[in-house]
Image (tube, rainbow over all chains, first blue to last red):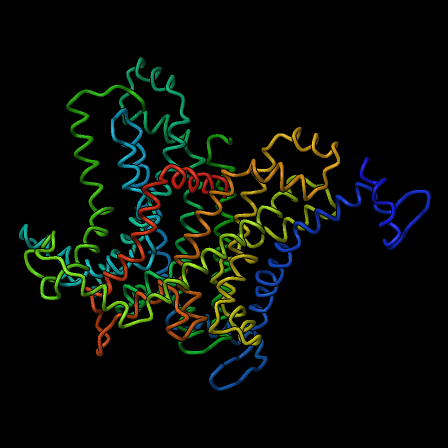
Length: 315
Length: 280
């Protein structure tokens, strides 16, 4: 309240000055500060998120080829073309395989590493640093190095040959290409989930294990009956982050396989990029963007629903 | 499961940890050693874990084949501008959403939060069109403006808001009674206290910008404008085959400085990123 007195002079410049009650009360000025503080983020969200989302919907209703210079309203034609697209099945299959494979391997490995690092052992900080280090390595650099290692005559097959095993041409085989892309991505980012699990494991009260020990429960049983239920909020959180992230995979595909061999690793974002920026079908690219948006939205809603049912407790 | 372990169990655990560490460490090792090998040794059998006589030819060629110094500067200055810009935008917005009461607050917060649900890949087509119309394609503006104000900064704003909500209000109240305005309260009291959250925002924003790949290849077309991730894929021979030694040299120069910073400040990195993961 002390501030109002000093600013009465400037209040006269305000839109509605009153001699008895100054318009620029401390509360009003605080509101104004609030709007000013959020203005950059709010305007940015409108211009770079909301407006493009509306535009992408609008574009998806048009036949738009940048090279040919056509832009025509075609209603739902692009969506019909999407339903009839002979590649759509393969693209959704690749997207699904990649996401499921990534989530299962990533969460499984992250949990294993976290449990190992949670033991009373010297030097766990060193191992934590090692397991985490790929997170800070430039994504494309990491991917290029793995591409180099996975060549037919590359480092991995070289090492396998020294023990008498002849490895496949990883990036050129239909099954092995998908497995390779998943593995490269898992080792890149599993450290993040590992750290989240480690924090969750450290929050499980030690008394619970002591009590279980007294009851004669085996370590495995303790893990499934105590650890897993108690860290279930973290399992759900990491699975949401990992699934949504897996749908955005692009650089790894572009660098390692270019969607091949055939269409076996053409995930949705890569297909979108091909259609819009290589074949210049902006209208169809926009339609694929809408499909991606709907999938992300549906998965997020689904996982929030699961949270209510499955998660043992909420923090 | 914090229990004392027998010696044998400990040995087994160390063995398992060492084996598991191989796929995390070996790629970086292979990248650096291969960059120092002559081309003939790159695919030698059996694989050479150490270069026999290390040489730096590949490093020289990186700079001959691409304007790599310029590309390095591009990546660095873009990442720094985006980091500082995101910190400013997200700290201000996060503070206001957490601490100031104004009309329409909740609705406006939901509008901003929509950015968390919309992956930037969804909006890449219209964004390209917008910047094309403004004549800003093949400039760095899209790589700077969109991350600072668009979807990538929303997570940062969310993290800052969660942090400021958890901050006790008494300090600020005292400052306000003493006649400090909002901006001064924010700048002198709240912002210095938010260092851990700001640090986390800075780390993940920098890494995000440093790693960006789809946006640069969509927006940039001339080599002197390229950023590092894009430049790394350009070292190919006349037949489009990768020049592995040069690629490994360029990749080493891209990856090693960040790795060194990480090793020095690993606690801040790990805890900072874990913190943002937990909140986001």
